[in-house]
Length: 334
Image (cartoon, rainbow, N blue to C red; front, side):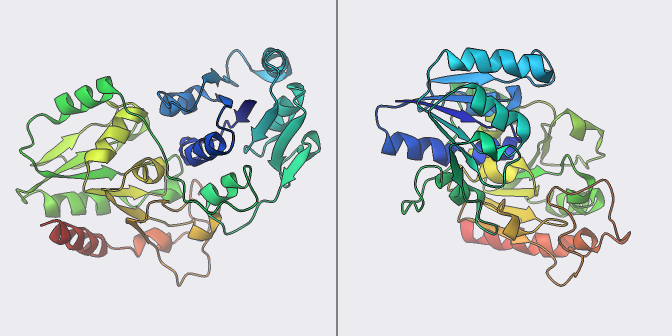
C-alpha cells in the first residue's frame, strides 16, 4: 500500500505528525509512506525509518503559484498512491491532494477545499493535536504513540563538540524566541533567570534559536553556552535529549523536547491556551500561564502586539515563578 502525507505547516506541526507515521505503519505493516512537506519540515523528518521518501514542497520557490503546484501534483500522480492524508487545512494542500487522483483522500472537515477529499475527518476542538492526527488512522486509537525524531551520528558528534567538556553538568536548554512577538516571554525575564542560575556549578545553560534570535540581547555570563544560529533542528533534538530542563515559549522546542522522556519541559503560554491542542505531548512537562485574564486567548498564533496594550499574559508571569519551577526540578534530580 502506498500512502502519501501532505503537511506543509510550521515545524511544530510536522514534529507532532510523527506519531501518525508510526500509527500508519502499525495498521498497514507493508505500506510505503511518502511525505510532502516544506524544506524545513523535511529537515526535522530526516532519518525517520518509517518514511520511504520525503518530497520537499518549496511553495516560495520552484513550486510557487498554480503552475508549480500543478507540476508537483503531476509528479505525485505518477506514483499511484492508494491513500492521501492531508492534515494541513489550507486550499493549496487540499488541491494538491486532489491532483494525486488517489482513490482515498482524507482531510479535515473544516479544511478550506474539503470538497477535494473523499473522507472528511472530524476536527475536534480542545483535543491535543496528536490525537486529532491519529483520527486519520482510526476514529479512536487506544495506544499512546510518542513523538519520534532521529538525530544521527553527525548530530551527536556536533553537539558533543559544541558543548565541550561540561563535566556531567545538568543542561538547562533555554529557547527565548518565537515567530510571534506576543508569544515571547519578556527578554529581561529570561535574562533574570539566566543571571540567577549562572553561579550554580552543577548546571550549564544552553541558549538555542535560529538566525532571527541572534538579535536578542541575551545575557551571556558564567556557565552559559550560546548556540543561537549554530544548530540544525535535529541538532536541537539531540540537545533536548541531553537536557534536564527545557524552558521555552509556546514554540517548536516544546514539541521537539516532547520526543524524549528525560527533559522536564517548562512551557510559557501567553496569548495562546492549551485548548488549542498544541501543549507539550510529553507527560514530563508543565504549562505556565495566567488563567485569570478575560482577554486570553487573543489569537491562535499570537501577534505583533498585545491588542489590549498591557501584555499582562506574559508580564504577570514573573521570573521568580519560573525559578521556583526550575529549582524544584533540579532538586528532584539530585
